[in-house]
Structures are given as structure tokens and as C-alpha cells.
Amino acid sequence: MYKIAAVGNLPHIRALALIGVEWFDENDEITQKIREIISNKEYAILIVSEDVYVKHQELLDNVKRPEFSVVILGKDEEKASKVLEKKIERALGIRIFE
Image (cartoon, rainbow, N blue to C red):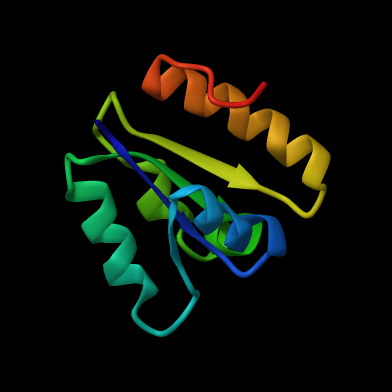
């Protein structure tokens, strides 16, 4: 089974840890952590805040793994949850939100 990781300090990104998503805080070593997540075949989805995406856009836009998705979540929690639901369903092949 694939893993999901999240990077960012928005409350709805941090809250994903409650459902088993591996959450990482933004810090000085986050670039290396993002690289590790992208290269680790156990991960299928990386969820990032808009701020993280802007800082690491080149790295995130050049992922060469077809089974890997980067999901960018903004501050609008309702819109973010809909985007997340669709990406998870596509990546994992199951619907986890009802």
C-alpha cells in the first residue's frame, strides 16, 4: 500500500496527520525531505501548501514518476478537501472520503 506525505503549516494540512498521513513541518531541511519522499517508491502522494509549492516549484514540477501526484492545497479548506479527495482516489484507486 502506498503512503501519503504532507508538507506545510496550514491547519488543514497538519490535521491530515490524524488520518495517518505523514506530516512534515516546514524547516531548513524540508528540501531534502521532499527529495526523499519523491524518490521513495512507497509514496504515491505529496500534499503541499501553496507556500511550499512556490518555494520548491522546480523540484515538484519535474517529478518523473507516473504513479506519484503532487497536490497543492491553498487556504480555502473546502476547495482543498475536494481536490485532495479526487487526487487520493486517482492515486490509490479507492474512495476514502464519504
